Length: 138
Image 1 (tube, helix red, strand yellow):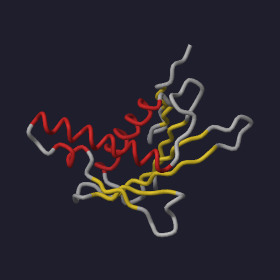
Image 2 (cartoon, rainbow, N blue to C red):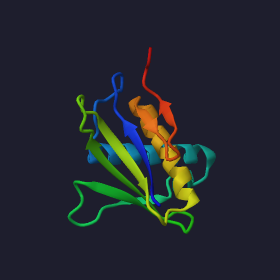
Image 3 (tube, rainbow, N blue to C red):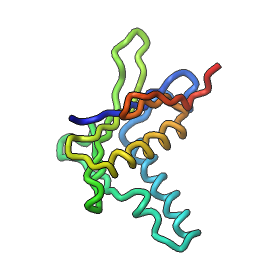
């Protein structure tokens, strides 16, 4: 059974929403930061920190994309954006681990979700249902 994590933009978030292109940019920024860390360590850390390529199915580019693993330890993680249908609509990013995802995918998925939620100061509902609040709350 697939698992899902959700990053919800709430009051106090750094941004009110994110598009798929902005999400891709943020993931590429994460990879770039890892490569800079690798330069300091004289190690190709970017491939270990982000062992994926960003891909999309033809005709689905505006709906979702997925990260395709570059090693046997990682298969894929799916990313999409949307809006809740409530009284006060909230934008969110959904991260899905398909049925055949590995434990490595789940670990990297958690790591990427935490990075994105912390960067955007958003609320994160993890794959296990727990909620982490990175937004300023009073």
